[in-house]
Length: 110
Length: 112
Image 1: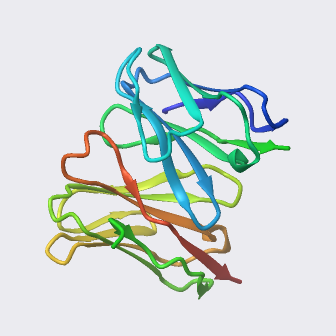
Image 2: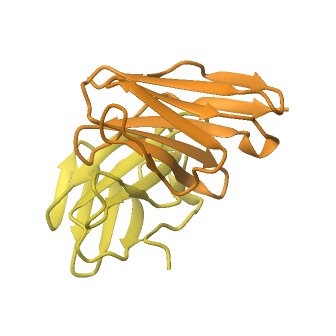
């Protein structure tokens, strides 16, 4: 079974804080993805990575950065959290086009 | 026009009925299609994938693909209240690398 884990299920941060969201997969997948999901807006791709140290912008990269130092780990960084980044953050991994999701992190920025 | 479209619902069906969820896509060259189930507050869970025209059955679930008409459907037979969730259609568009394009989801409510 594919296992994708995310570091926190719930997170509360203050405006202006730097926030790290971690994602780890145990299936040796090449591809990893970060999405955010908001009511009425569906899943939106923030960043993705096809290999270690490689990253590509998705549809909404502004205000975010990512890091992939090891194949199994893909981190999403909010450099200076803002209230409009309150959302559900979902990590996914894949070997091909079939994506498997982690449990999600619900982030509240106050 | 969105690349992958679903009716947002809610689609309400009585327990034991067949629930029919539909998805249309714009890219005629798309080859791979997926259905994910997402319970409220949880993450999407893959339930079906389909690659060829026709039907693919897995238990109470049947995925149907019609590439000529550019739609993919999910049928849930003998619907149960536990099937109440949002169902996301995802399409691997042509020339999209390994990215998927997701529809907005259809909320299904199965009433006892």
